[in-house]
Image 1 (cartoon, rainbow, N blue to C red):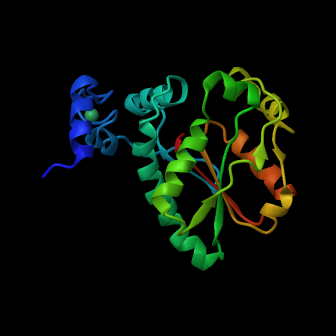
Image 2 (image 1 turned 30 degrees about the vertical axis):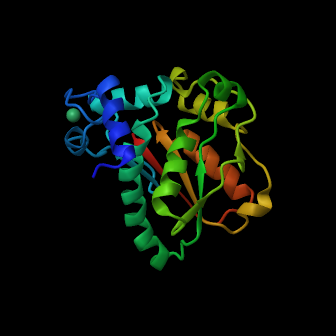
Length: 220
Ligand SMILES: [Zn+2]
């Protein structure tokens, strides 16, 4: 017998059908076939940063744009599952080789102003979903430790690399540093471009006593 939930879901699907943003098939915002055909990142990033997909691939670019700016939050489930698999893969090595255990999962924060405008932080949504998937086995969420007190100019608008770093310098702040003392940290963001934002977050966390820091993003 169909459960109540299945019937409700079927009804909702009829009234508000969901289509793949890339191939148009019904069911998911980005179907598993289109996702599995998305190329992994080939461009190099820092050794401690692990991005999943190539941002230049149109379905990934579109999906992340919808997720970040258009409130298409259902995409979080699709990306979080792939991210979780990737995190476990890395952790299986790191836990043995570098004693990277009991990690704290920290989203790259938005400033208060940006958060108000958007209504949500896409990195935080990814973290929440990751914690659900992980069921407390490998990491726990700390979403209020790393703060972004002021709005910085959008990195993409600043051409010069040195100016970009200067723009970010001091843009993060650690609240309650006792909670991260000697802790391993997994940073999460949706996209990394130059890696400068992640590097600045890492620097701030390190200065507050964190042990080892790695980062995962959906795309590069
Ligand atoms: Zn598709």
